[in-house]
Image (cartoon, rainbow, N blue to C red; front, side):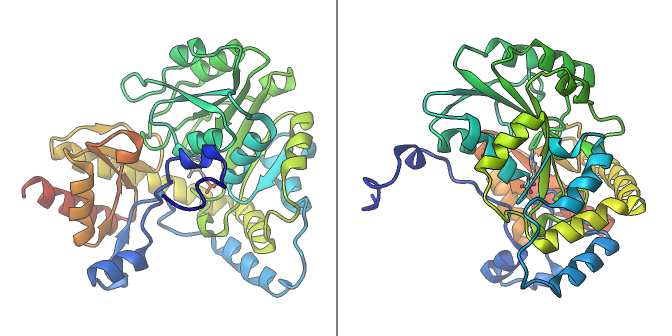
Length: 365
Ligand SMILES: *Cc1c(COP(=O)(O)O)cnc(C)c1O
């Protein structure tokens, strides 16, 4: 027991600790491997990297790094406004979309408020809820997909927020567009529906919740530059919704929350449509290849709509450790209550093959 236990807020002590995907250098050091031979498929990063235009813009922005960044991210917000088809005052940019999720906690979630999430949903929803003293109400999934009817039924007069990601992480499954829209429509106006579109760029036809926002439904959408845009290391994401809500979230936001390099790189990346298309195509190919190889191993996997595949391997931690010794970093899903599963991000072709080879040797051990 730490001597700070009596000093810190009690909600902090009951929080689960987020376990990020292991960085390559850690694994190399721990296992005595050459970092250059390690394949990291643990955090759903873009295996092709960021757009070369984005990288060039980030490098150029370094030259002026003695200046504070634009706190309102004017140029980026302007570009996002046309990218998303919303007004500029509907947008907020954050230090990763994770920060935006936390701003929602700051602004909306308090002691004993209920927050409805799907079981095994992205763990940050639970962390944010608990951090602000709220109670996460977890609704069991149906065949690895969020049960929207069940989530609707879990709403009470205490519910403040509902978080939903589709495609979901770590399952990779998606709910049907119309089901998501009907679900949003069915929620009482006292509940904010936060729709996390971290993987929406991987969908051919992502759900469009803008008409609901326009009609005054409390709906807020988050997106990120960490996944298909390949800027995870810069930490930048955004959200859009009603201008009044955005103004309130801005009150909770610290000034200069998004650094200048991230703003420049994100802006240039948005303009590189070709890169985005190429990455989307490469992911679709890689994902199909990975799913086919997994299928041939006769083990269960969840049909993915994102840039990773979630696989039932028996003992997730054991398989993860086995693969790690082979220099392949996957993600065990025990923290999500999926002890038998691991998640493998779609990598380059040779990376996917390394993962399959290692998984095969684990299964044949
Ligand atoms: C990766 C991910 C995010 C993005 O987080 P950032 O803070 O923007 O890097 C958000 N939601 C889900 C479901 C994710 O998987």
